[in-house]
Image (cartoon, rainbow, N blue to C red; front, side, top):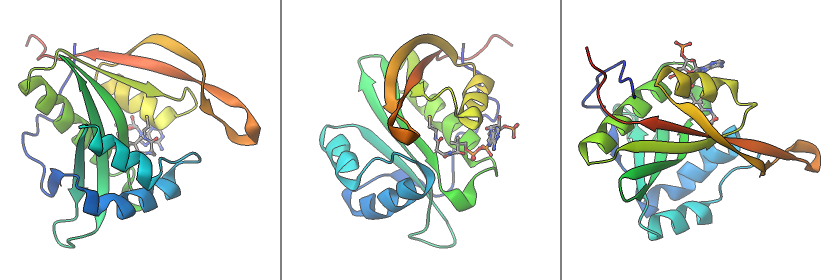
Length: 165
Ligand SMILES: CC(C)(COP(=O)(O)OP(=O)(O)OC[C@H]1O[C@@H](n2cnc3c(N)ncnc32)[C@H](O)[C@@H]1OP(=O)(O)O)[C@@H](O)C(=O)NCCC(=O)NCCS
């Protein structure tokens, strides 16, 4: 069962992602991933109806701090992308955005959230574990890896809902 440790119903600077944001999103993406999504990948995702969210600096409009993409499959949400800009990492933004996303999905009727993560991504694994995500399967060789190899994806899932007090 999900834990919502922050219980933050509102996040300042949060707004839906639009096509106009994508060049700046892709610029962050290139800085933080070895194998980034392209601007075209994000465009395709929004065109496919996926839900994009952005956290923008309140005091500096246009400066993006974090973003996420959600794909709804009936009552399960696939967290396709969760990213914090390189200069904003380690300050609690990832935790706050994930908290908001899980709460939002729960309130919109989702029963569970699913995602893929590299087993080498210790920061992300710790974050997801803190929210109650558990590994449900492995996709062998799912990701490209440095040196031309492949890396597995761990599929993590979390039942959404408030824990009994
Ligand atoms: C993973 C990511 C989303 C976390 O967001 P963040 O804002 O940097 O993390 P937070 O400051 O909110 O920290 C939340 C928790 O994440 C984990 N974490 C964050 N940075 C970490 C690091 N460098 N090493 C280990 N754990 C880390 C910790 O569990 C931390 O909780 P704690 O501070 O109580 O220990 C962010 O670092 C990021 O965008 N990384 C690059 C892209 C990526 O890997 N996205 C996830 C793909 S599945």
